[in-house]
Length: 139
Image (tube, rainbow, N blue to C red; front, top):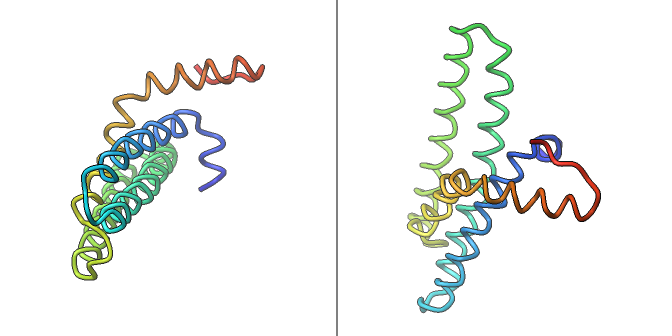
C-alpha cells in the first residue's frame, strides 16, 4: 500500500484532498457537537476506509488494464463488491458498537468523492511545493 502511494502522484493528491475535506468536517464537529470523540472517531474511521478504498481502486485499475476485457470486467466487479462489503461492515460495526458515529463515517467516505473533485487543485498545490523543493511532479 505504501509503495502504491509513493508511485502514484494522482493517488497522493486524491488522498490529500480527502484529508483536507475531513479536516474541515472535524473543525465543524469540534465546534458544533457535544459528543466530540464519538463523532470524530466516525469521521476518522471514514477517512481511513476512504484511503483503503482509493488504494484498492488504483490497484484494481492497474491490474485490470493487464487483463482481457472479460477478465478485467470480472476482476473489477469482484474488487468493487469487496469494497462495498467493507464499507457496509464498518457502518454496521459502528452502529452496533456505538463506538463511532455512522453518519460522520459516511461523511469521511464522501471525502473520496470530494478528493476526486478537488484533485486538479491539489495537483497544482503539489506542483508548487515540489517546484520549491526542486523535485518533479508527474503531469
